[in-house]
Image (cartoon, rainbow over all chains, first blue to last red):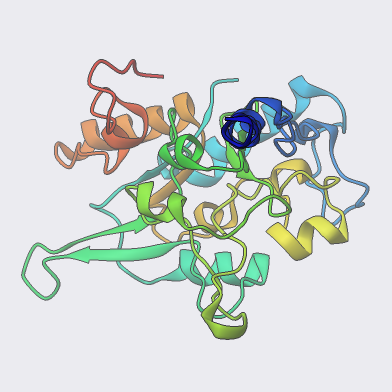
Length: 77
Length: 205
């Protein structure tokens, strides 16, 4: 009887061991520096026409590049 | 700003593979990995169509959903990026992606897959913008330089459009109206629309 109780207790300790497992919260990097914050690089790598750190000027620069660089209907009247 | 999107105009794509070359050159992508590929339907048959395919940076990215290590994250501009430091090379993302975007270098010993690599919309990764570490893992961060993805900027026929979703959609709409045909936007329904896999009632973004 005593052996059975010890055996059951030992088995239970294995069964409930999972309950003591620590929560795993490490989930990698979820944020990144915003692209409008720019890089440390200087021209000619940086596109001219916008100011690093200024979100509006960055958005405007990309819009201008999209419209002037990819829309050929603005090139031909 | 709306979110960043790609459009490939199959009426204009001439299968020159310039986008593939530009991408490989810009990011020094290793052998065996093509972040962008040109797929031709009905090759050799009159009326064949080509589309340039890469990561579409989906609204509800399946790769993001299946990744067991939460390697993926989405930037404020809607670009789906990944952190190679947490990738374990399980390959689930490549099974889940409808565009075949995730690639594995497979240069490791015994054919180990290695860290997943995919199109970053030229936005680098979690390392400091423009740093050497970022370049070595993810390639150039052109967005942080005020530029658009190299593949689209150098496309000779301007078939591949990249940028603010509203602006590129306007450009494409204007083309369709002028030419009177070719309104199919390849992959948009899957990536951004209500036909998204597993999302029957999905909202358009």
